[in-house]
Image 1 (cartoon, rainbow, N blue to C red):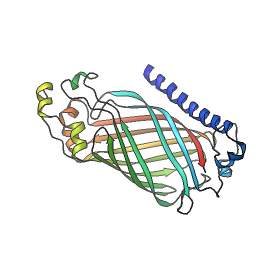
Image 2 (image 1 turned 180 degrees about the horizontal axis):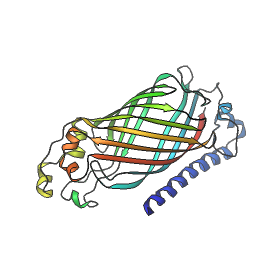
Image 3 (image 1 turned 135 degrees about the vertical axis):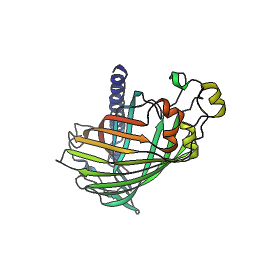
Image 4 (image 1 turned 60 degrees about the vertical axis):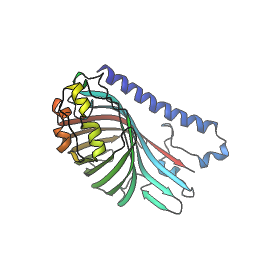
Length: 290
């Protein structure tokens, strides 16, 4: 539990520093420019965020940051869980003058629209020095996946599809499909539950689940060439509680079963086909407009 507590303190501190830095920027700004650079930054300012939005601005972004901790598999196919920091950025409302808007500026009603969103995932380094069962396998550098997605949202339903490319680290394509049933027991609570499906091309699958001939000799594992396709499926459950308009708490649990080439990999056979992830984080609403 010690690493978990350490990550929690670091995540909360990072969020506090971010808010403090934004507040400092505003404090040093020229008063005449404050209207064009206004940010929802301090909990002491109780003015509703919707009232701070100036429709005359060219760009308006309302978003929330999540910072917290997570427990996840040590690597793809592992049966060991590790603690790690967790960060996320989610846009509730975006408006570009002349191009239209997506979402809801006051946060009270839920958008009913088809929209485009960004998708990002960081995958940590896999090192044979950290796990005895991986001795003989080559290390895999950290990877950053960047991409786009489509999302359709109604009040009690959301469906999405994301496609990402390994811009740093692996050079494969990854896709994810999902849908959520959404309920609002009260104004403060939001619950989600829905299925997930994960896809990857040959490059991605072979990077994390393949065993080359040379690795087979060094590790004693059977040589294995992983094919792309449907690599996993499962479900995710989320709960979010809003303390007020600015601050909230979010928790989620995700369970996936590795499938096809991912499940048949000698790496997975040493670990587990079942992959779990638990996240807990503090959320903070912000508005940027200029």
